[in-house]
Length: 133
Image (cartoon, rainbow, N blue to C red; front, side, top):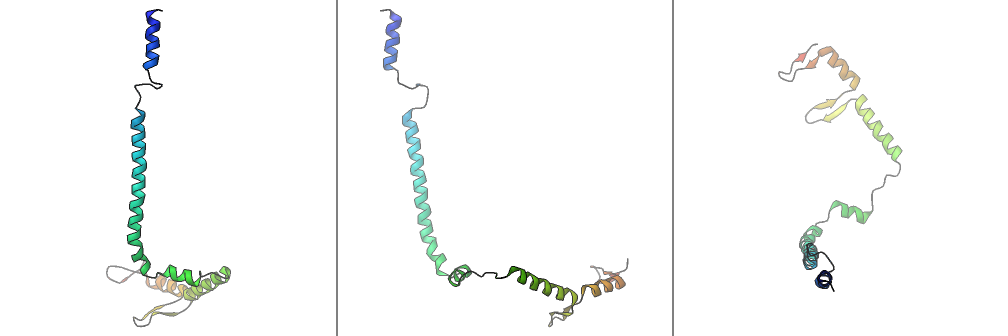
């Protein structure tokens, strides 16, 4: 047998089935197991925190929990509700009424307000006088 053949045969016997320059499988397995252990510990810590915080949050009855017991508020006829809302807004824009009777602030029809502003001018913010343009 030639010396080259013996060397090649010896190399194949001692050489592993993967490249020796690559990362060791032991390192890969240890990092992978450490990752899974870390994720598991994080989950356990999160559940521990939630158990301590959750009873305090459940002690007070919130509006949504009350609604869940009574059932959700459903809109029976959306078009009728929208029409009523539009009528209310239209009556406020086109009618007279009090905003706050104690402070003596009222609302007037929008057409009348525009006519007053056209006649008097826009009020100046600094001194409260009307500015005629």
